[in-house]
Image 1 (cartoon, rainbow, N blue to C red):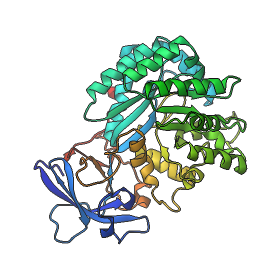
Image 2 (image 1 turned 135 degrees about the horizontal axis):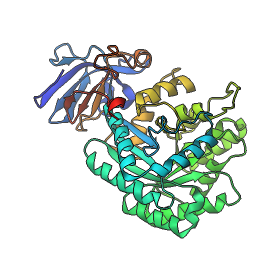
Image 3 (image 1 turned 45 degrees about the vertical axis):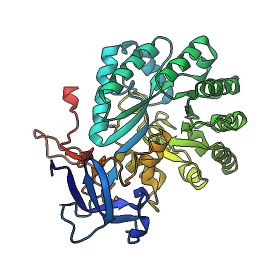
Length: 435
């Protein structure tokens, strides 16, 4: 399917209606899953026409294959990625993960970080990701090492993946002079300020300080909040109250928010209303949280770890899904693949009845939260950065996402075709054996 000339058509493409931003009145005929059959003209690297499928269109016939814009992964941990084999978490719980990563971080020099982070980005790019935000552990001198590697990778991946960074420290760190210096460094790099919020006697002071630092430097905020099954953990509520009290006008994203799922419906409703009023967005990390939450030796887990995504969305809160950890002590699996993330989110959170516009949670919603409004949608004159799947419906796309030609042959692990800047690319995942 390689195309070299600058203008061509993709015909008979199934596109989710929620992702089409122009001439919506033309697309009245949709499937039960709100997919519409379209022809797409691509010229000089941009989308120049989107029309209902027409018999007279001459082009590449996708035979109802689904076409999506490239993925946007708004919550990852590239610095921890791919250390599982050398530092496994055999208990599988959160506290062991913390201790194991702390010990492994002694090896995080520039060479080690570059090798693992770059491999993660290779996987992300091959899966169809075009923008990615990573949280990096930034206590003390580790910040200088990790941020230096991130800056190098941001330069090397420019034009392929847009990279953003958030420091990962406990919020008490920002009460110290070192924390203020870190905020300055993040501002210089054009990053997002953030950290881990957990209940403690000084949590209110800590949250207020982070807001103060962000406001002074005109930075958006991205928190880890309530990543537990503790009913009394209300960091999300406190973040929302502080946002309202300070009239904070930058984007705020809160990740995990697992405790919201175990709180009473009345308490959850109260917090969700505050979150909406404060214009806070929530990113759910269902694969990692399903893996960690409610894990006890010899006990079958009782709950799923995922936050109340449906209730949040119904209240008008922007909800995204993302990869989170990958092959490290917090999550033993993962491949930086947002199709896998979306598939598992649909299954875990029962998003298939109906699919509605949930696909936007790995596309347009995180793109807007990353201040990349040209990504995550299919619009006229937008860059032709697309993913083509042979699946014709969500029921097919989310049932058979991978295949292989067998051991000993070239592994065709990723049955999708990437179009970047209008050019159809040969696509293969990096091999673990080369890593």
